[in-house]
Image (cartoon, rainbow, N blue to C red):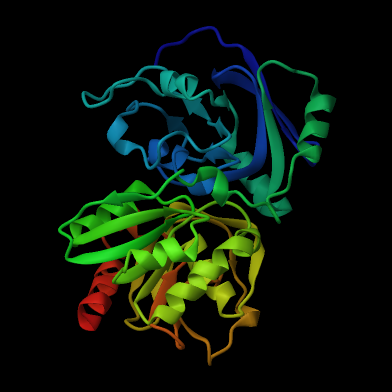
Length: 367
């Protein structure tokens, strides 16, 4: 890692906590909900995950940027995080497959960041106080102004963000055309598309607010509801109509993350804002059917409220072993299932790949 003179930067939290460091990425001011990810690698996939839209991403692994960036690791068309926070930032990279440094990547995407922060100390602070908004600045260095800015930033609860990360028009992504899947893009990750393509699916990926009539005309064999950012109850205001259509079609339905929450909301269950949330590549999830534990990648600040569960509506299939929250549901009134975590992210590395196979088997059985 080369040493170079650094411009000062400040991270200010809405509870008044102020941390000083060095500026990285694009010079400026940015803000959002402060969250952290415990993954040791995969920073580019994390930064481009649409589910992180509008959030400041703090990496707990101390050394970030050492293998640079490359186009194939992008999960979306652009960087989705609002800002980046690291302990030690690598200006140089050592990777023959990379095409630019993380600094160049953040600059090109106009993402402001701060380094030289004791991220693990800050994580403990968040775990004790709960998730909160924050601001990163390398231009305005008045602490009081930045703390007030963090206090005034829009809360994630009640915020609709899926429409800000979805595609502008429907797109067909060809597989072997063995199965036709209508996929709804609330912030769909590229590797979800890849997993379905590899299993013989041709996808028609629809924007978040696509009318039911357009979806119906494509005559899918199954329906998929994707991950995405924001409060699921806000997304539900326009998304539940198409979820209801998919449910009543009698075709198999599969949901991941936000899609899981939307399917639950459509059946009358409730969601809740979590105190901290789950973000990382090491979350243990127990499959209640097999008794096996899957090491999962997760990224969510909302969860299905276990107190709203009705045995006549859905059966819990997976639980988080850290806090007992719901990680999977099998619905009883239509052929559908969903998970809160990300089977496409391969942390195990393939502990949860069977979920895509399960969706394929359901379509195969119906055909």
